[in-house]
Image (cartoon, rainbow, N blue to C red; front, side, top):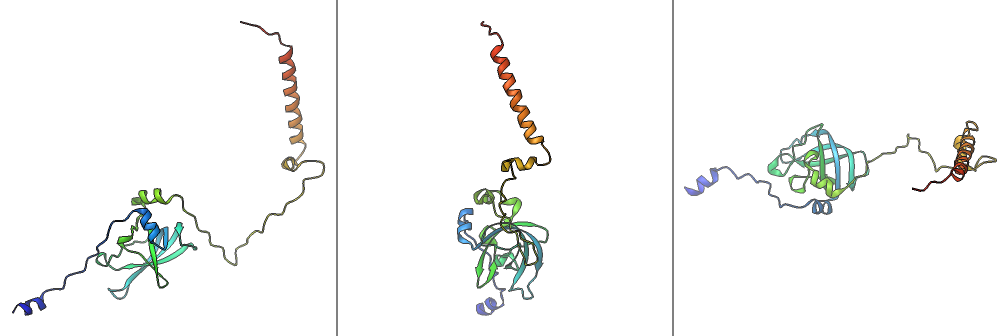
Length: 189
């Protein structure tokens, strides 16, 4: 009778159980660390599968080289999944699992407004800039010699003689002031 009742009892749901880790431990223990805004969440067809979340990368600290990235997470909190919503921003810690990035509740992934401690630990991130074939990329700047008859720094005043004129005027005023100071009678208190 007991074995029949045990067989009919519902199976226990496996709950996500995590050990607390610091922001530094999370950084060191994950392949990818970035701040991103959720663009899209594609739900898994199979409840035991994973949701795929597409992020726009705002800044990154580790392992990201693109402006957009996809990360998988469990479909429920019992499977350590995170309920990402489009338009929300997150600090994401993820690991590479056979070419697929995965994140979950145990890795300190959290909404950006709750991530002040982690952001203080991580410091300034890098803003990604993706350069494609269609983008025009400037080559190294060529160095032009200074204009004839002047210094390279005077080239910015090439609209007229205003640069050298002002310089000469300032020098003359300074010299005149010095002469006046030397001639003025000195008084003692």
